[in-house]
Each structure stands twice: as C-alpha cells, then as structure tokens.
Image: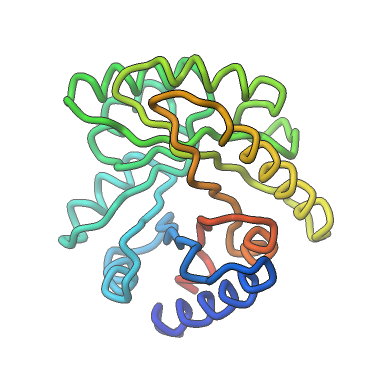
Length: 226
C-alpha cells in the first residue's frame, strides 16, 4: 500500500501541472481529503502530511472520526445532509459544502445561531441535471443566493458541484465550465454575508480537468488513500 504522503505528492504534482495551464499555481488549489470509509490511522497520516481540510459524507462517521483522530483538523460536510442532522452538523463541521435547499439553509442557520457560531457554507449546484444528484438548478441559483444571504449565522463562501458520472471527459469538462460560469456571475452579487471565493469541484477521477476549468478546491479520497 503506497503511503498517503507518496499519493499526496503525486496528486499535488498533477494539480501543479493542471493549474499551470490556466496561469495559476498549484498552491492556489486547496485539497480536501475525503475520508469516507477511511480508518483513523490513514486519516492521521494525511493530517501529518499537511492536509488540514477533511471531507466527510456522513455526520455519524464524522462524529466517530473526530473522536478517534485526536489531531486538529477542519472538517467539511460534503455529502447530502438531511435537515434532522443539521444540529449535529452545525456542531461538528467548519464548512458545509452541500447546502442544496433553502429549507436546509434555514435549519443550519437556526442551529448555528443557537451555538453562537457563524457557519461557512457552499451552495451545491446540480450542473449535470442528473436526477440522482442533489443541488440547486442553475436557473434557481441566483434567486436563492439572496434568500440564504439574509439568514443569520451563515456565510456563503462559494459553490460546489459534481460532474456527470461518465468515462467520457467531454461532459465532465462541460459541467465544470458551466459551474465556473455560474461562480463568476455569483461573485458579482453584493450581499454582506456572501464572499464567493471557493469553487469546489473535481474528485479522484476528474480533479485535473476541474483545475484546468478553474476549481480552487478539489475533494479527493480514493486517489489519496489507495
């Protein structure tokens, strides 16, 4: 089994090359280590290798790993979040990347207020249009930004999305281009609680394409912990 550090060095080299194509540095792209199904020892390796951003798909797994890990880290919720888990999510996570409905945003706002905490969030966009994926449609995104921006105890920091699940790279690239376009427009929206600075897109199979299309955050699990 390769070490996490070896895998990380390979991934960072790939990110460097992809970022250079857009005139950026690889250091401009934050790597979130996706810990779904990964044991605490391997996660600890990632943190010790310099990865302080950890992404988890399930609230219960994050609870268990936070307790077992024993090292400081910034946890990101990246999976679909049910409103009945919003209280625990607001307690555990620094960032919720998967805000996909106004109802969820309202519940997170309520729970963050109770904690006297400002919760950083990304709005998930379903750019591929696939029914099995969660997220706001591109058409409803601009209107919902204003509604969520009015909620207390939340700070909108960007957008998150996934490309379609296909071996063909063209539809993936097209989805990333579309999300980048939405991100650029959203950056022009002026609300006190909105700072559109994070474009989170790209995973193990397509992070290089995502970086080429403008991602400044990628979420990588399998390629890192293989």
